[in-house]
Length: 98
Image (cartoon, rainbow, N blue to C red; front, side, top):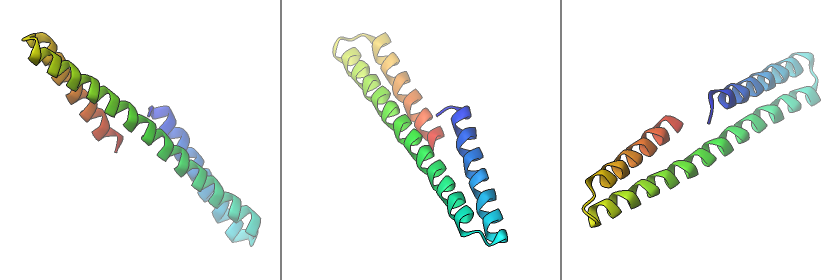
């Protein structure tokens, strides 16, 4: 997930909180509900982006494992090393995604 996506979700969540607070202060139930809905939408979009990134990172890790195994079977140290690097990169990206 890009920094722009994170900022977009945070902005939408903040707007929802402001709208909810304004609705609560004004006694406007509709505005309060809209603010809550905006927050829920921001959280759902954020979760969807995280799931997409997780799937992508799992795929990269599997690809790296395949290269590592192929390198080990063929005695290609370079391919084996590239596979290990791809796996480590995928794990690091997944860790940052949390």
